[in-house]
Length: 112
Ligand code: AMP
Ligand code: ZN
Image (cartoon, rainbow, N blue to C red; front, side):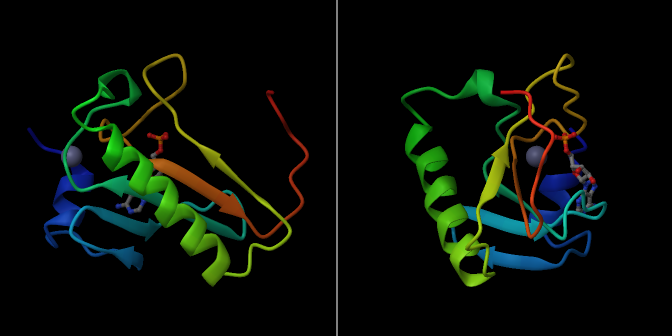
């Protein structure tokens, strides 16, 4: 399995890190869609949200704790958006579950 995010987690590919602990890492998206654009992901290779179950849901909860911490630390006081793409229809390009944390601008385009 050749997973670009696992390689970033292992330090083989450089990244700009916003946060890291034993379970989770948050990096700057290489192609930011908003002035602030982080990717928060578990270090464990979970392919997408379809694989979330009782064995790993606490890890996903931790991702959201980290998202709140990063939002506060980076001044996203006006609000932010968290997006997860799962599978082809959603346009998931990297098959290692990750959550986009977007902010720093008033966002107008909404699906929901
Ligand atoms: P998704 O389309 O939800 O799978 O999002 C994948 C995201 O990963 C995109 O926003 C890419 O810009 C981002 N990305 C791809 N390669 C890297 C990388 N080496 N470092 C940081 N972000 C990356
Ligand atoms: Zn991976």
